[in-house]
Image 1 (tube, rainbow, N blue to C red):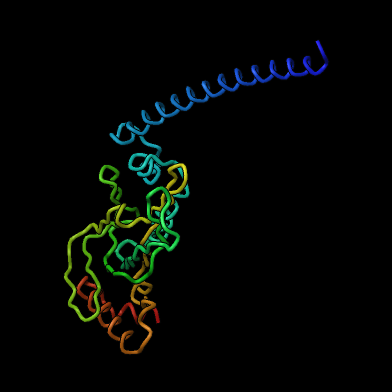
Image 2 (cartoon, rainbow, N blue to C red):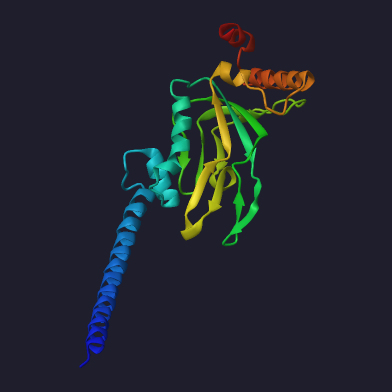
Length: 237
């Protein structure tokens, strides 16, 4: 046998061994993935049915509602709760943002959506707690409140009973990525605190007339919710 034939024979044998090992590794990886998903779904179902808990309501919510253990997904919720700490009984102002389809088109048939334009709509309410209201079965979440109203310049407020809830799909910016990874961003901002809420002015109110109309509507809504606007303004001056 020539030297080149011996070399080819050795390489061929090595390649066959590598192929065999690759198949074995892939088989073990597939089995591990299947076992992981079985175990994960068992834990998720226990949390969904209230038979188990991670000890953290927000982690429970994302696990049960969305099958997510990603701390980045939960951070916007935690940021809101940090704002709410010690503010029960005070005002909150929810600032809705518009979904904006990005110019970059779609990924795997799903529209790419930007972070959203601010100042799409406003809701003023009174907090009754320091934790979000989480409903994983219907994938909703909201703010603990016994009353709230929309704030619309030039319109009288219509007070409604709480809590103030919004749907996850409606208020979350879901951008589908490669490998079905979802980027979840809140399409709302929340201002918490009596003086903070009453000081807020939308960015689109650039003129003196529009700012005055907004402030009048905001104060009117606060009074309809039982707040002493004059006292709050004096204390925050």
